Structures are given as C-alpha cells and as structure tokens.
Length: 341
Image (cartoon, rainbow, N blue to C red; front, top):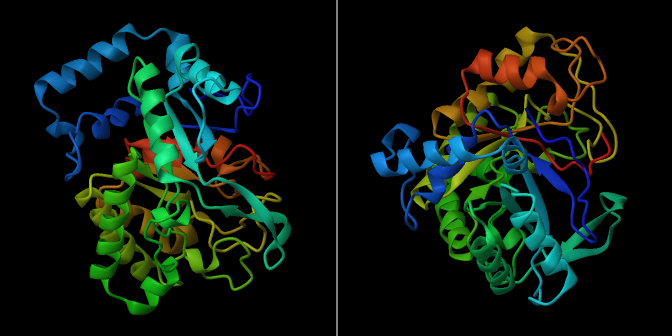
C-alpha cells in the first residue's frame, strides 16, 4: 500500500515522496538509537523499543498509516513560527500524520546551462535554520519524524559550512574503500547534528553508458564489483556515524541516455543482463546494511508487461524483483514525484 498524492493539499507546501508501508517499523531503527553510533540490526532492538514499535503500529488508524508513507520536503531557510509555510508544515504533521520530512537546500538558483536549461543549481541552505524547523516539527509530531536528505557528496551538497566531498567517481578512481568509509562517516556525523537520520545515498548505478545525462560521475564507475565494494564501505561509514543509507536507483539507472527528471528512460535489457551488471551493487549495499532502497523512474519491459510503467509504480519490480527476488525487508522510497518521467 502506498500513498498516491503528488501534491500537498496545503498552500505553498512542497512536493511529496513516498515510502513503502511494508517496512514501516524499520523507520524506528534510527529514532530509538540515542545519538550518533552504529545502527543496530532490527533484531537488536531492546524489548522496550520493540514493544513501543508494535504498540504504535497497532493503534494507528488507516489514515494515519497512509500519512506515515508520505514525506514532504522543505528548504533550509529560516521559517518563522508565525508564517504560513510553518503553519502548513505543522498541519501536515499534526493533521495528516506524515511520516517524515525531506530537507533540501535553500532554493533553486539560476539555470545550469551545462546540464539543461530546465535545471537550476540549488543555493546552499542554512544548517541552523534546518535544525530549528526540524526541532519544532518534531515537537509537533506524535510519532517521531524520520528525516531524510540526499547528501550524495556530503552535507555540503545541500548546506553551507559543511563538508562537500568529490563525486562518487573520484572515489572509484582512487579505489580505496577506506576513503569511501570515511566520507560516509563524516557525512553521517554532520547530518545527525542537524537532525537528519537518512541519506538517500549512495548511488549504486553502474555507469556503463557514456551518453548517460543524469548518473555519470554520481556513480562509482562502470565495473559492478567496484561499485558494490565502494558503496558497501560508504554504507558502513554512514552506519558508524549513526545514519541510515538508501541505495539508488533500483533496479539500475546507469545504462540510460534519457534523464528521468525530464522523460521516461526505457531499458530493454533482459533479466539475465540485469542480474549480472545492474543488480550486484544493490546486493552488496543491502548486505552491507543499507536500510532502504530508492526505486528509479525507469521502465523495463523485460520485467513488467506494461512497457511504459516506471519501476516506482511497478509491482513486478518493487515487490517481485526487490522484495521476493532479493528478500529485502527494509524501507522502499520513491524518487521525487515532481520528476517528469
């Protein structure tokens, strides 16, 4: 079951992301872990924490469960407690019981002509502003919010004054898992200081198409084994700093020549090819402790009879290939619902 809304009913509220209900309880892993530290496996929850999770799930209404699937976004600028946007975000928490918040930078800047005129670089956000708003929203929440961001190159990817690492391909060129581990650890420590629990990273797509306009240097490289090894180290680093990793973009966005922000990529590889190239890094990331998987807005006719249905909406891929085929029991997130795929 998934929430299907692509627009907030509130004035000025941002776009929504969706996450799977099947793994709702896993969202509490971070929330019951006090402060930075290695995240425990779900089976390591102490009896009191496990009882809290079970009792909370039992008392939620259907509407509240649906709300827990939805993650609105906000930008990291100062928001006054008497402003309309503050009222809207608080209403999403109190009245619609959303499960979390996704943190972006300050705002969109000028168009990036090197990529596409429809793109614009994000102006970096203010960590104190994000932390202040998150504290107020957490105080308004009956169930603690699971806070996410996409710090692919570190918190400095979105925030002023934070560490910004090179893109993943630089780590692929260096070939040293220790560097990837340390990048993950530092990212987690800085993110947790702001109040952010989940990183929509690493990118585990295999970049084997030089015409790919959207993955490219965000990938560790073109070799599945290298991508998996470095992604695993990065995930372990995030865990060491107390942060949950989400591997993306399932089942693989590396061999495309279309940007899913702008249109729907169609990947025509057979299942056997996916098992040998695209999927091994996801297996490595999950084995290393990734708590979530983000689905791609890409279509794969070999896996879904509807040749134009993105993986995000595809039961054969999200449920069949990922949960049944991979045995994955963690969280499943969609990409942004504002993308044009």
